[in-house]
Length: 420
Image 1 (cartoon, one colour):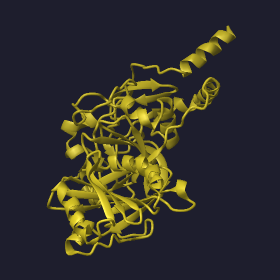
Image 2: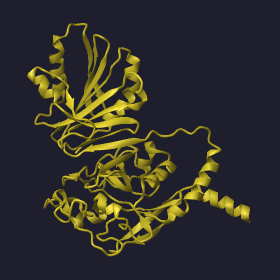
Image 3: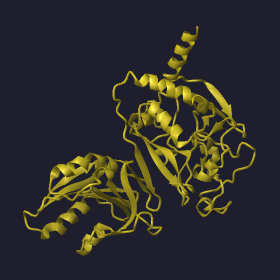
Image 4: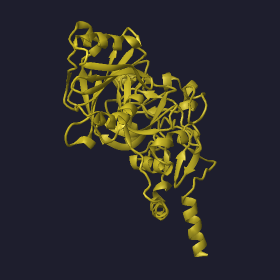
């Protein structure tokens, strides 16, 4: 009998079991739940207006600038809001959006439930096969709550993630229908928390951190999850004996620029810093392109507009170098940037520069340039909603294989660019 019970336990830990059960919050809202592996999750976004001890959470509106200016409570006060300030229309569709201080106070979820830690999110994603596929398995299919065409959404877990977007720390609604960010309770640093980001149209889920003043969605996980962690670890060790050298998905980190309303996802092993970058488009118009940037790490003005990244894989010798920066623009002509750059570089002799002027990476249009000494540079530009995002990638080497080694990672970063 003991052998039969043990075998049954290991079997149950190794499969996804869907449970048609519910949990009720202190407001009386009832949520469906789903068990995935050893974890039991809410299958809907949290929408409570009170902590589980009955304390009311301050409601901050976007339209009244309460969210941006923190006029309801204070700089570190828990707050929540509704999409477009309308509970009547959006409460049941996307739930509420909570700032990071509401998440870390510790009793936001119903009794017996909690906001998942960064590690608990990793457990879920690993169970589903890694970051490259878990997003599609968690995402609701169709276009009722996601922008068309919402490719790759299977929702085989019944987790039913919806594209509710969020509320930026400057008090505007963000990327509704395009993505959803779900908080974890784990700090990245004093001012940010880790979370998970799911886009429509791609199967990935990304590890990301956002400002504590940002409004993101919350999915609670059952406290019972913690009690089964040791059993799960034991079952995973047994299962791993039958798998030879399983490949580990590459983790990514998503970074959002609130001021210029764009974000990128980069491999977690890449070094990242904020930059204040001049607009090369305008500089080339004036006839002097410097490609200058300023700022050390996070020590830059509040109006920082871009990212500087390099791979730690190249810690010895030359490093790949990628700069991505955004500017508000009035013109939206995709071809002008390449035309302007081509005209600007006409001062080079014929053998000094060659370029592929019809290059593209996803939605970004661009071109590859090879200079006379062999150095290669990849430029792309993406226009949307009054924002122009330009990227510049180069590897300081005359050996093209060095450039090509990092080009796939760079192209994935460029494809990840999202503009509000």
